[in-house]
Amino acid sequence: MKLLLIIISYDIACQWFVNLMKHMEHHWPLEIHVNPAITLCPQIPKLHEPGYQRAGHEEFSFNYAPGVGMTDGECPEHILAGHNALGNAKKTQGPGSWHDVLDDYFRHWNWMKYTGMGA
Image (cartoon, rainbow, N blue to C red; front, side, top):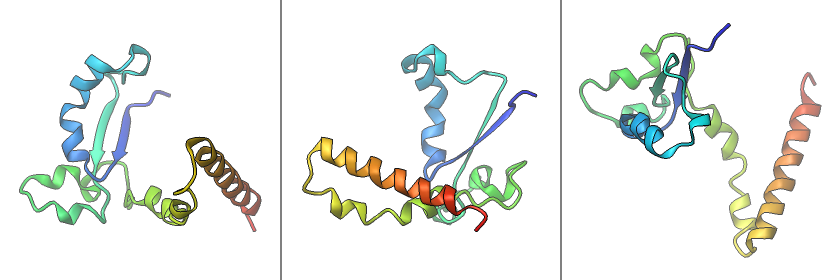
């Protein structure tokens, strides 16, 4: 089975997607170029979409995207919200300590997530 469609959920997908292929062609290494047979479908998460009050903007709405069902596109932000406290913890740290704290925190978070599945 081949991958034919990639849905991209991003707050400003309508802005950055316009030049994505041109940027990819000129600046990305060949090994990470997207296969031309794959359709990229940029969508704006449902919480952010109403902020774009432009005519013809429906093409970026999850409400009209094929194959997404009732997806809202906000899942990555729901997960990140619980990690906001890390901002204060790393303010006074140098880059090495900062990376260590993030690695430790996310390793623990992943461990808790995986060991808690099914509970």
